[in-house]
Image 1 (cartoon, one colour):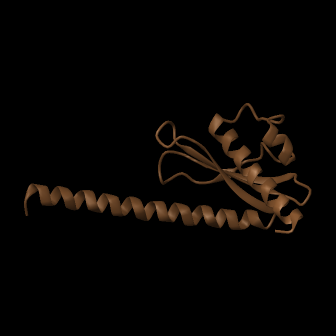
Image 2 (spheres, one colour):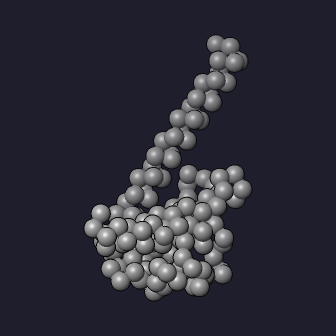
Image 3 (cartoon, rainbow, N blue to C red):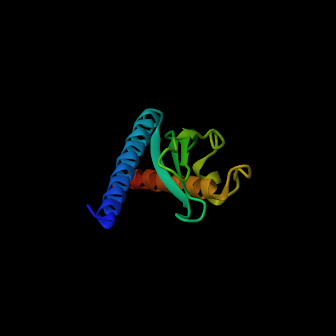
Length: 133
């Protein structure tokens, strides 16, 4: 076996293990979302950049009146990142989050961006339901 063949096999093994770990991370996040869905309407927003500090995924659950009842955040640079509770938006209305009136300054910008996107998705869903689509 040549050096190049060994190198390609190592790269292929590393790539396959990265795919497997990413799959497990996605399944774990989906399980966390499943528990969050029991609390209300859920949407996931994404903030940040892929190669500059990583991305953040924020899942918010809102009740029928448009108030956030719970949230999750998934952020990190590796496939070992786990979702964590996000309580800083609990009790805020969707409109307050979207307009920026109730921004949580202690959260990084990518989490704030993801929270706004998630709130917009929920608001749009409620608008579609109200209009009868």
